[in-house]
Length: 295
Image 1: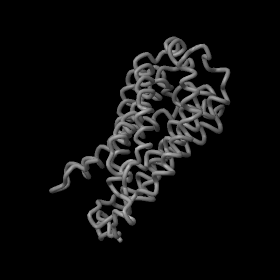
Image 2: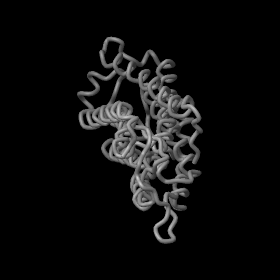
Image 3: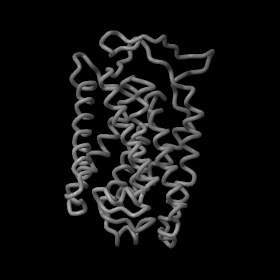
Image 4: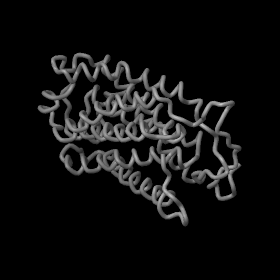
């Protein structure tokens, strides 16, 4: 049970079953994280700094337009790189476990999109074969890592800081909305293109939908309210959303000002940044006597 403030857990803790250490990150999981990072960093550099259709058609797996789509995908990649770098060095599984299933969704949907739009890719580019190899294998590998490591997590203890009920409600609602958006973009790309703030093709609609599917990370707060579980994911979201905001400012011409969804998404982006920054400040910096979480 949590205390009346909703901040501290009351679950019994244990750190061993027999002689087996618990809440650890398995070596195979660390190795997978290290393996994935270079692909994400290279893709980020290419797409964020050379986002034009001509550049992506020459350097990347497929020709992406408009520029904001490239930069949005790049923002997701660098957020993922940060997550996997931190995961590779983490000392406790419960601090990183919430990021794996969202990555499975993201990479799995991109794999499906690749099959559905095979003819839209530049098969002569090495980047395409790296893309295809990554998204045909990463969903299974990341899911396997989550599956074998999931039993390592420990329940909350009396010393754990828990997110308050209003915080959980807002975070989970935002995650559900992101997931619903992902379903619409992926399942109804033709209709989505008629209302979306920037131009979409069926392929880019499904790619953007895959990015929104990362919002599943926020839904998981319903299952575990510990701040130590949410902390890294909040950092990742701040990185991604911050870079997307910069990208939006740089590519204002890509957006249709006459579409209501343009302004709704802009408000959601700015509101999410402010809300997450405020949450991080309250939980990590401003609490009297608080110490930054490590691991």
